[in-house]
Image (cartoon, rainbow, N blue to C red; front, top):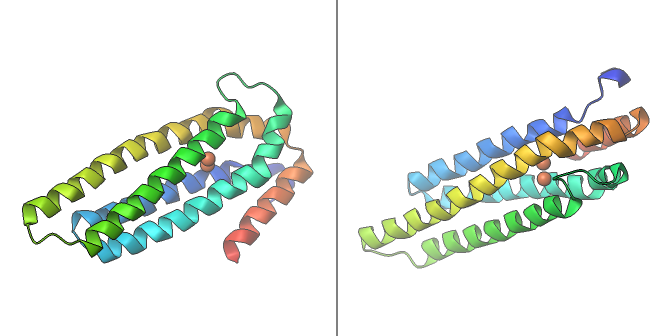
Length: 164
Ligand SMILES: [Fe+2]
Ligand SMILES: [Fe+2]
């Protein structure tokens, strides 16, 4: 890519990949394949944690240079990340519990799965909100705040981490 084409859009596009991974986890959950649902959730969590760590360690330091962004104080982004991590811990616990305390009563088992879907729906709405805020405020502010050289270096790091 030419330096002029350097844009953080590539990082934002990772949101779509993450949403797909979460849906793949939900498909397994719907099929009551708890082992697969667990493995896919793990994969999603690892990828999401890497994405959020990159934003927190490398992008937020650039973002704060912009100063006050109406509707986008840095605590909103880090706070949402923290809530997302909390949700995911709960999901992992719920699946672990479903796997180890399997209920022979199909109805009781089904209801526990439905409760997990309900919690996951709340999580998905948080994530949708978070991605929208990043798309409307965070990434546009970064585009104008980062120098060409910074953008190039950050994108190189982003791609290097994803290859390793
Ligand atoms: Fe993001
Ligand atoms: Fe984020």
